[in-house]
Length: 151
Image (cartoon, rainbow, N blue to C red):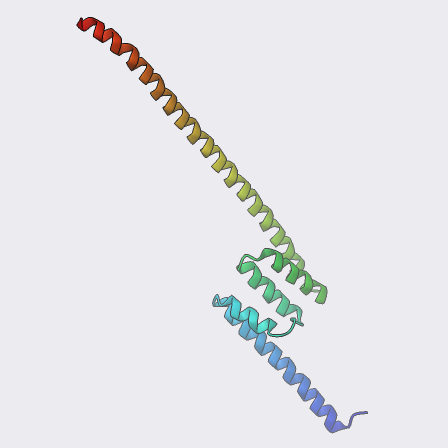
């Protein structure tokens, strides 16, 4: 059993740990908001796995900002498992999934557009080459008849 002095020291140590965790999270948030994502990420994961759901949430947001969507989903899933009462994490996961679906449709649309433009360009080139070849044959036919007139 702890003495009252030891309990006070233990409570003080706990309070200090919570304070430093909050300070680290605040600094990481500040870094992320200023676009210094790697520094923020390093601060949160420096030689350890993040412990709080809020840290995991910030890591997920950093991953989403840096277009590492799969990693963002992993962090938000871990944050939701750590804090199932927070309804924001499932919403973030759902929004991420919708954005990824949109991205896939946009990519498919762009690819289809590029293929269509390539086909049109190929058709135009073939048409141009065919018309030149046809015109060249027509000139060859005209030349002999002009020679005959000159005789």
